[in-house]
Length: 99
Length: 313
Image 1 (cartoon, each protein chain N blue to C red):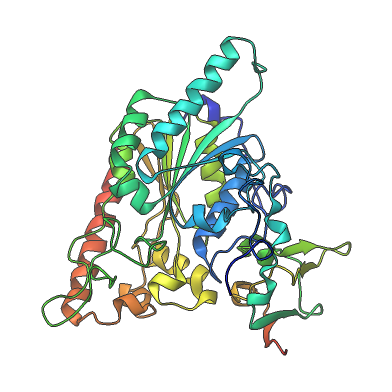
Image 2: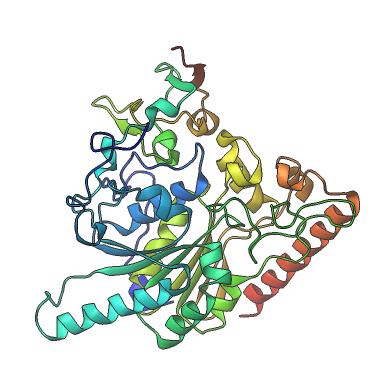
C-alpha cells in the first residue's frame, strides 16, 4: 500500500522545527503491553510489600496501591519476567497470555 | 572524604524518591538491563537535570519521533561529542547565572548518558578533554559490552572470548581476542574527584553512587555494567541475576575512587568460578577449557591489583 496522506504520521508542514518534541514523557501514549507473551500474576498472600519488583522493573510498570501492594500496569508490562525472578518470596508467577 | 559528600546520607529502601524522570512506553527489549540502569540513575538525580545523550540504544529506544520518554530536558548528539556538548551546556549555565538570567542558587546537574561504544571507542577523546577541563558534570557510561544498537558489533569494552558479529568464533578464532578496556581507570587517571563502578543488581549502591557523582563539585564518571539479553544471548528474566553474578565472580568489581583513593564498596571474599557466569550466555558458548582458565587467571589478577590499590592508600 503506498504511503499517502491518511497513513503518514503527519505531513511535512506539521513537523515541528528541528523535530523538537515539546511534550515531556509523551511515550506514555505508546502502549508496549501488546509485546507481552507472559503476564505476571501476584499472589497477595505471599507478598511482603518489599518493593523489589517495583524498583527492578525496567519499564517502570509497577505502582503501589493504597494498601501498599505493588501492582503491575499491564498497558506497559512487556512480560520480561524480571519481577518473578527477583521476588524473594516467589509471590509472582508468569502466566501465558491468552488471546 | 570530600566536603560535598559529608551531608549526604544515602538512599535506603524506605526513602526512595517517588518521581520518575523516565516515562514508561519506551521501546527497549524485554528484560533490558541498560534501561533499568538509566531509570535508576535518573531516579537518583531527580528532576533538576539536563540530560545529554549520545547515540546508542538508550537514544533510539527513548525517542522515536513523535514520542519521548524523557520528562527532563534532553539533547541528542552524535557518538563522538557527548562530553563536549555537556561541557558546553555546563558553561552556558554558568554564563546565564553570571548574567543574572538564571536563578543563582538553583542547582542543575548536567548528566551525560553514553554507551560503551560512545565512551570507550568513539567518544574517548571528548571525554578526556572534558574531564581535563574540569567541568562540573556527570558522565554515565552504560556498558553492555558491544554495539547492541546496530546489531552486536565488537567494541573495546567487549570481554575476551565473546562472540559478536564482527568477532565470530570459528576454526581459527575464538571470538574477541583482546581484553576489556578499563575505562574507569582511564577516568581516574585524570585526577578527577569521583569515579565509580555500579550495576543495577545492587540498586541502592547504584543510586547512591550516581547521586554522589552529581553532588561532587567537578567532573565525575560512573561506569554502569548493564546486561543485554539480545546481544548476550540470555533470557530476559535473568538480566539482574547475571549482573549479580558478574560482581560475585569478580568479573566486574564494584568500587569508588574518591580523589584518587580506591574504596571497594562490595568486597567478594568467596568468589564463584567465572564458568558459572560464562556458561549462561550464548556469546561464550564456544569457549574451550583453556580460554576459561585464561579468563579466570586474568579476573583474579585484576582483582588482586584492585585490592592492592585499595589497601596501600
